[in-house]
Length: 270
Length: 270
Image (tube, rainbow over all chains, first blue to last red; front, side, top):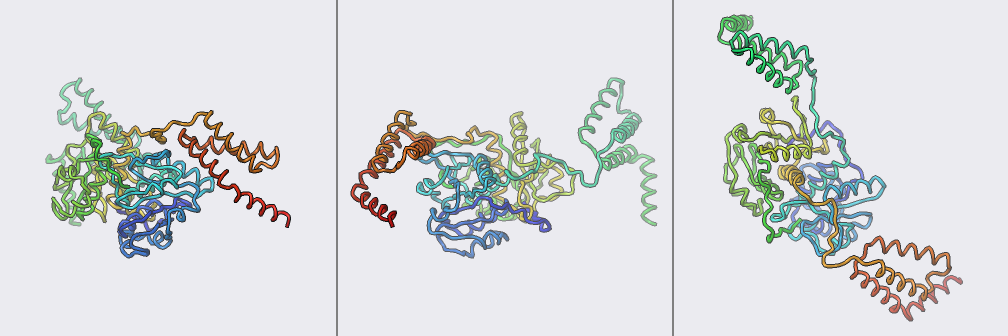
């Protein structure tokens, strides 16, 4: 999904959750996680004992320009040090653990984190190493477990995808984007009067073409056609398009179309 | 997030949306998208004119074992052919397009797709090439646009992350996993009587240690301690753990505690 709008100021979410990667292995995976973080405005990256050290040049290209996150990243020796300033820490894991610890969905986790952040507290998300996931000792340090509902027969999520899903849910808690909307651009919705003129035009031409055949069929087809075009929510401009279509179809090949074509060609020559 | 449970039967969502990758470039990205699909039970992959042909060996390792999706994948020459059997098609794009076409959130999109699938219709999600995204001609074939709310200053999402977010939202529409729960394992929650015995034990030892100092402080601290431990929702087994802790602290201190106490009192007098 391409399309960064460089003109818009970065809508960075201040005080969004810290993303804590515990013993991450490949720099490439760290870079992809960074890209997913910044897609959703998260900038506080903390690395616990990254296997290949830090900074890691392999993370650069996959981060796809999210330098602000890479530059601010901090390295810690232990998970305990990495989370010391956080009030609530959620441990991501797909695997059930033998622990008496609350398990929440990503959505519930993010709703709680938003409440905490609104109350002035700092929060974070723990992610384990690519293959093994978090250790139980890391989970025991956490407020709760967050587990993504998924296909339990194929539950190993790519690190960047897991970070992306959590960051996406976080962003949604602060987003006021409506569930659906239709951009109107510079157009105006058609009035009922404009629509009526389209119907009159279409029905006149259909009458001429012998399309209706009987009074009964005329009533039925008129209703059907009106329902099709009211459902389309046409704009003022689209009414013109449709009238042009009706005209072209009605006159196409016939003497009218020949005349119009001749006129157009004469115009071209001017 | 590691942890595939190979013992559980695959909870494949039948008739989940087709994932249509239009002119995908790197095999690695197709493989990662396949992994994200199958994490959430999606198996209908359609490739429109993949740049490097199909099958592509580069897709194998990143698919991480989601062979069922790779094996079923179908290749088409055009988007129109790839979506011909679908009733509703949603085009993913982060970039606003100059089109009068409804834009929905992933959540709204998935709710509508679930309704359609429940009504017996087939649905699909269109994803564009990694760099450029979908062409307007592909979008014009779609029912609506689905746009992930994100940081508009850094809106280029990795293909697998985009597929993962959509597949995750789809899976949620069919998931009955509660927002939160606490596994009890083989333990039993403690009764009020067990908890009271812990309080009695702790307060007795604190009394012996001279912790309460005054009647007023005794009342206050007893209430505070009771609130701490009722909030923990201890199990039967954890009551035993806590009583062992109190006992160890009370007796372990023995002479050492006396010495510390003497030291503290000496300090007070200074």
